[in-house]
Amino acid sequence: MALQAALAPLGSRGTPTLGSLPLLLLSLGWMLPSRVQAADSRPGVMTPWLRGTPWDLSWQRPELAAILPRGRRDTEKKGCPPERRARVVDENLVFYEPWELAACVDGALLAAHMDRVNTLPFTYQQLEVFKRKLDQLYPQGYPESLVQHLGYFFRELTPKDIHKWNVTSLETVKSLLKVSRGQEMDAQVAALIARYLAGGGELDKATVDALAAFHPTYLCLLSPEQLGAVQLSVVRAARPPDLDACGPVQMDVLYPKARVAFQNMSGSEYFEKIKPYLGGAPTEDLRALSRQNVSMDLATFRTLRPEAVLPLTIAEVQNLLGPNLAGLKAAQESSPGRDWISRQRQDDLDSLGLGLQGGIPNGYLVVDPSFREALSGGARLLGPGPVLTAVPTVLWTLVPN
Image 1: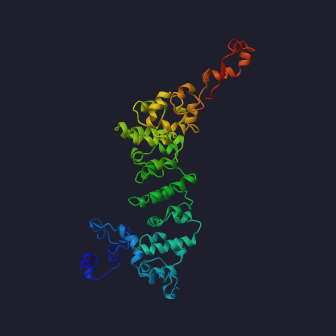
Image 2: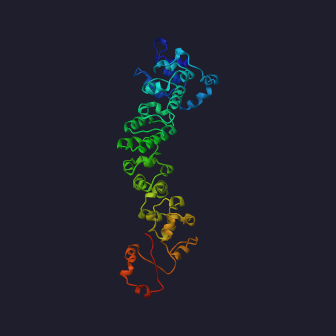
Image 3: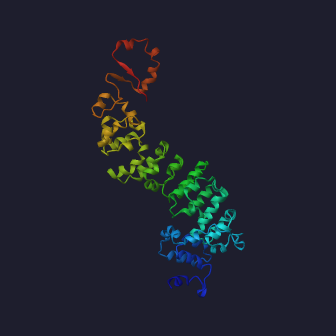
């Protein structure tokens, strides 16, 4: 009775119509609400009902295979009855069993009429059959001529599928982003952007703005110029793993944005938010953090720019790392720890009691790097040896810049 009451407004005099079929499928959880809207040929009837329904049917999809009779799933290998062979994509296919679609619908027919597929109220199972058909037709990936017309069918695809594509049209990217909004499509969107950029495509500001609707797993795919157009809300939403693939030039753009994005925070809260972006921090900002005793972990320390770490004093690094200073021993063979240690006097390093090696030995004179070029031609500039013979106990060490 409840189902009849729900269907009453759609059919005249209680008679089922094609317009009531999508609602029935939605009620059973066999169809996406977005496809019901696409299939609704009578504006003002289906759409208000969808807006008024409180249901969240997303949980029902994984359960469909479990409730279908196994016998039905096992009949997909049946042959197609001659009278059921599909020659057009129309509403009649909506009434086909999945095994009939598998046997009677050709993948090339679907590819040629994908726009029509998106207007009909097919169930999840039927769409899965269509996907298998297309995958069999294009095992190396869908051609761009098909990708351009995928529309809502894009939601049926996986990142693995998308990574096989060649995408060169920005309009295609925009159309697929549009149908992905409000869905759990972050991974698919990242794959789409990766394929487009891999082909030499450029994102305009409107597209970068559209990407703000998705979790920024795509962030490190963008060029420094494109990152410059990224909204601060994207920076706030990014998680540390989203930034793992970003290079120094990208961090140089993202770090100033992060400073602005988190400027209303302070103390440990600010440090936790800014930490993933510190690969773009300059020396003066690291010094400021050292005065706040932030206790930076060694994993973050390893991401710092060597040129930003080198000018720091032993006291500043000690304050920056806090109780994590002992871990510097394990980091002394990699940058920036190795580079920083090589600029410190060994006596000062020994005072830390960590067993750090590789500093400037006692008695060595550190020559300013700006003086190195002059000294490199010193045989003529300083003479054959008067300077060195005058102070034989001094060893000149040229420290790399």
